[in-house]
Image (cartoon, rainbow, N blue to C red; front, side):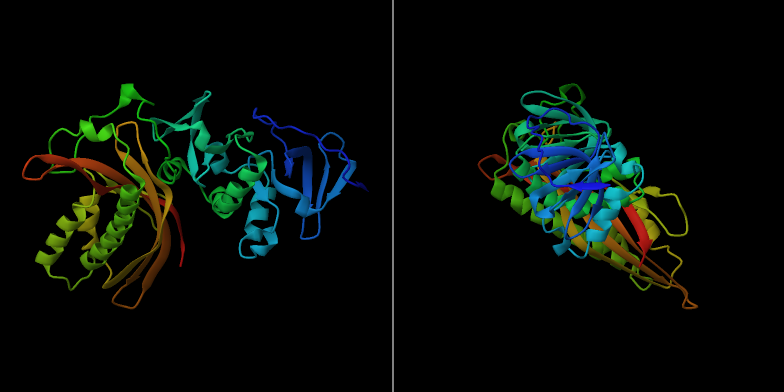
Length: 391
């Protein structure tokens, strides 16, 4: 194979859907369509997409990122500075075929969010998509790029801006692409972002306040919550998740007082929306079982182990709170759960499960003496399993 100097550049700026082959993106909005064959700290090798005998050697510092035909990408500059995940990212890029994760569309926002969805359409102002059989839309000005399930992709911003966003999400994207993804995961792990209240007016559920609250909340849905208020509520959601973890730890202890357990279950249920469910997995079986939250909490006290330790860590947002088509606010938080069960004969079972939980903001009326005001409170929705692995 001949190694030729890189002399010819192909300018392809304009945001149509790009062909499903390896595409190399350079600084100054320049691209080439090649088949990348090797990447190391000194150079990147590629062959011509039409003539494999025509080869190129490229200095990595000249490249921003590269997409392959499956829709996976590599951000090139300084990639070897991330020594922890570089092998995994390269493995994902060069893997043979497509993973199940690649069978979903991904909308990647300027705020470094990955919306895992089914793309519907877009126009001059908005991109429309479906998550969990619900229609949403996001302003096109908030979208950096779209990666389609076909492997094609469309960049809606400058190459430099796209590079910055892809650099932030690189590790997460590769991790998702290499996991055993399924539809449940796609729903629970989606970053449901920038939802338009008018996106699906024919399928908008009635707006209600938190459990036990009543009254008109229509005024609240016509207003956007101030950023400072959203920030406080986002922090409260993480606090509620940590509190739930503490409740769960108390419930599953064999020496806990039954009355205290009953009280703690009620306190835990108050954190959730009605009809919320939780998925439970195990290394000893392949299926994931779903329970209603109350049934799950009751079952915790019936575990066969003499001692149980459940610890939650790495609690972080994968989708910040955004307004949905029903006027409520939604977000997605991911965390890791370490489960350790010890039986009487010192036999142990231990695993680590990555889970996602939906966060929902709901308005309610609060009496203030001279009248009522609209307030917002945080609730937890369904908790899903993403990956279960050995500790």
